[in-house]
Length: 171
Image 1: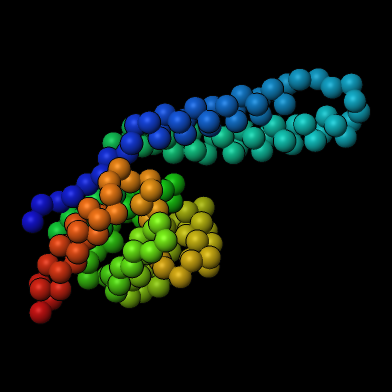
Image 2: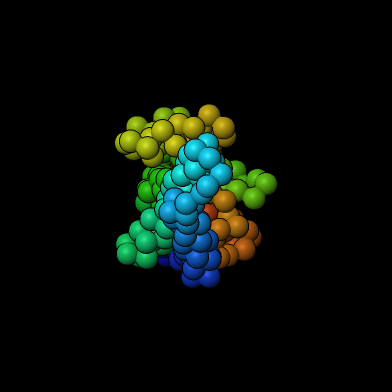
């Protein structure tokens, strides 16, 4: 049984980096352009500029991380599912930790036996984001398969091959 990996689509990464740079540029413009409309307008412009820089900087850091580490976005291996498809990547989820996998409404939902498995292995802002994500969604891991360069049928096929192999190994 071969590993199955999805690389990051270059066009999407370039688009994300371009939009991030645009937000950063707008934020910098809002920070440096003087205004004679009053102190309130100046303060609002500066706050909006900082927010735009942060809003653009986060995805740009993500794109740079993807480009430098060259990790595949999503992999299905004999050990489990490796997810690096989002900013708050999960990493390896072992087959023995996975209780169920559901394909629904544009995403893959992965349920683990331990509902806090992913939260316990992260720190800082990623931990907070995983907690917030879990409060919004029922599954511990949600992978949007529109971000992956494959068809839903191909993805289902590969997951089912490895999932069935895992079930056979446990018997």
